[in-house]
Image 1: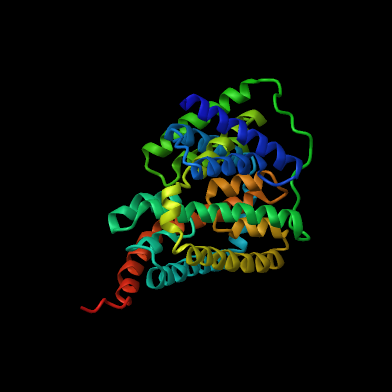
Image 2: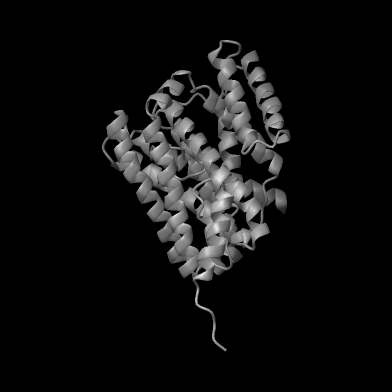
Length: 351
């Protein structure tokens, strides 16, 4: 029965991905499995993707990103450091403001709103939230709902807005000839991914292969090669991880505060879109690159969308990585502060 369910999920994911590819949506290979996972979860079909499969997918994605990272991005960030710093600060403050309002005025239990509204670092926020009285199921729901909204918005930007970027439309070669470069890439993903986990680097399964691969690839030491079939498998695993997290029981619990949750997500996305508009004008880059660089989505999701569009991958991943580390450093302290101060403002029951 379990094998049949996984088979049906895979079939639904492939069909949806093919549909999205026909519509020329960015990250179609990610959005298809994500939507299929959501539909299965809401139908009450319980499937859990093994954690090792998700970590392996992150490592492959890290190697893919490394192909696009060059030394020039350091110069770009150094020249524009005031703007980069301002984007980071505004994102953190906007997330804190959304968390304050959720803790104070929504029906979310405990400090759930503070942890769930953190604009990034989803896995870390979920892991730490339970120790501070938050409902980790709702925190995960809020985090991945925001990721889903960002992915949908990116597709909309790519399709509708002028200068938003277009999905890459070259014919896809699914099964190119195998080479030793693929074996080297798989070895890099395995070794660096395991090292990132052992060293307890935040999102280390993806960041360690990304950084190590960028150094080796840019230095001419190795050639990173990731065929489309392998990248598609990684996208499927990441999409399932997000989609299958939308538990039906949690959705019922979240129905009452859902309007406030959605408003907080839209508020954060609107702030980031405004910053993207300013960033595009200031740095003379396309809006899609600026939007993905500032968007409050998951690092792996944004990477998948960026790879399937004409965005500046180096700039996008540099700014997303900087924001991830800034949130991991400040997020827990901000969430604890909001949990204490905002909760105290709630009126106490009389009698």
